[in-house]
Image 1: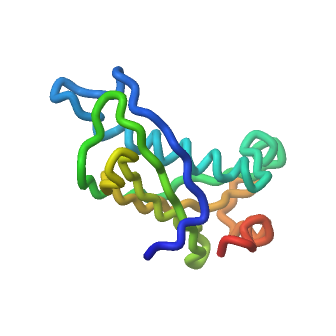
Image 2: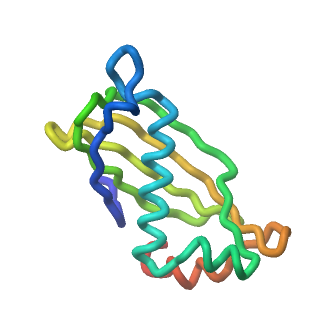
Length: 133
């Protein structure tokens, strides 16, 4: 059993689907990104404020495994947990359809911290994420 630390509910919008009537593959990255941003906001992290301070968290790698397609109007949950691996923060994110709890996508998103243009360990996040790591 995975110990998720955050989940966000969403609903598929019609325009996110392709001609096959399923969510276009690229939209899953939007879902994952939105959930990460909402998680960060819930922990008190503002991307805008950090950027003003010269700190940027940037995605360095994304791995997506599509399992079951979502369709228009499907409600779903994006669940995540987080690990520190060297200089990277790795977000493990899964998407589940609410109606049957079916796994739709498994995602791994690696992010790094850049401060004033230089790659860092992002020690500030060790403090902010202390309860989750």
